[in-house]
Image (cartoon, rainbow, N blue to C red; front, top):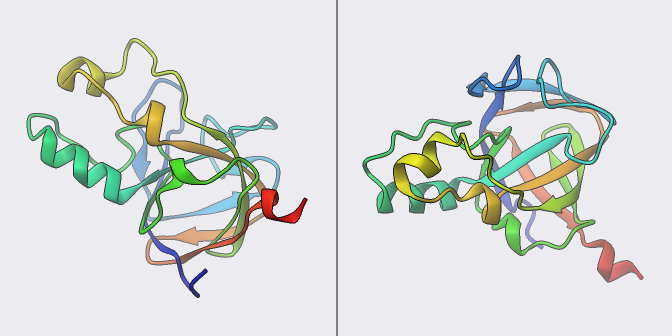
Length: 155
């Protein structure tokens, strides 16, 4: 792998479930929890959600009728240069000062998703991934992202 595989473009949280995520530009990853003040953080396997900026840009070009801001798909971290859906569960991702372990690829899109209602589809179910925070620290826009290793390579 290269020294840097990707770059953080946005850091988003929602302070209450059911509300849109807001791009703070910087936040604190809390070990075994998620992003500080994010309503979806907790002691479970989907502590942080990640989505490729490149996949968001593709979606935007295919669906100009939909307004897409960082966090619109419910993602916490928008990162350019990495196709997350192609990485296996167990992949270790160094982002900013923190370290994540990929725990789930995709998710079922809830029926209230405004993007799916407007565009007829949403990319989070196929392109979004989730991770556990295994080492906390600050993460901010502009931080490098490094794929450290794939668990499957270390059997």
